[in-house]
Image (cartoon, rainbow, N blue to C red; front, side, top):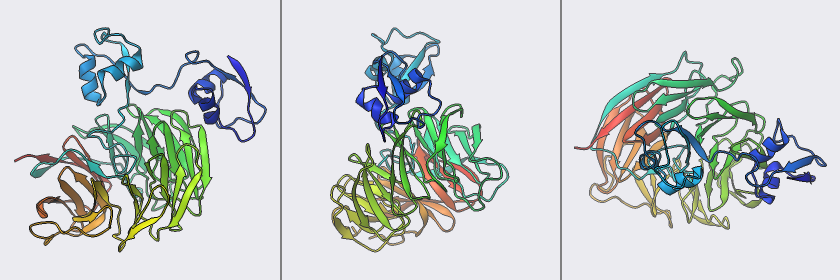
Length: 453
């Protein structure tokens, strides 16, 4: 080991990058209670690679009798070489029942929906198509309604994670709807009336929760055990985004904060021109965030350095679509911030598929912003959407209506495929394993099963 003296303005994350180690290794080597509480002149021990434990790069799985590395790779959406490398195993046969294996997180979420919008870019699009019909599945309800607006759901590891009107976040089994664990968003009595719970984010074995009071917590996704907790600013925190080992959070005091995802150590903090209540989007090494002042900001994802700022005149969450970033009715060049096109504000963020942006039933050309008239019926009879709750699933587009109900639109034919009534208006929607999961305004989470004809 070597000694290093902390310089003015340095963070543990920056020191870890310089010495090719990790924040977790520095915290362990120096027995630090708070990874953010380091000061100029403080002496730190810098461990050499391998001298101290590194953060687990994924979830930990105890091998059961009959399980194989090939089967585990298929089940968790990763590869056999990735599991062997993460566990320093020479051959797949060198795995025995009872052994603990680190399952590395796949680079893409596959069929799961682990963050609001499914991917860090918030594209709202899944590769799998839905069936030709739908039927009710299970229903799950929180405890006594505390007057809190539920969060949209996310899915990972065979569970649905959601905040409900009782002021708690719940983990629910995707197959059965049975409760696995729950935890209060904030301490009892501290939840503001009418507060909205931000959607959680699940990444690399942990679930991240941002409370209305500005706190952020990381919990084990399977057990609900708290791993670390801290603060990202004053007032309500926006929906978190986790990617590439970093957690990004917005706050009501007008700041974006980046934290080391495994430890909560601050990477950077950038003050913007207003509260950041909308979810941010990540793409091409930049974080895109809309403030309540109506500005779209692009900052470097690793350093927080501002790349550009533009007025967007809307409070819709941004979406990164490779060659453009869309906020409200405006599309911008993600590198320069140049306005590429504008159109009437649609009132919600689009879902992205290829070179088309999809608003509920309405395709828009990615490069020009012009409406693309669907073939056949030319969009006649298209039900109106009632909320920013919609997603693409293969060649289908699903969205919530005011009835209340849920409809499935055939994108190729430009026609209604199926519809189903709902007991209450939908607030959020996610897709996993052929099931649709919806949070409703009546403090419930429901599952809808789709079937091929």
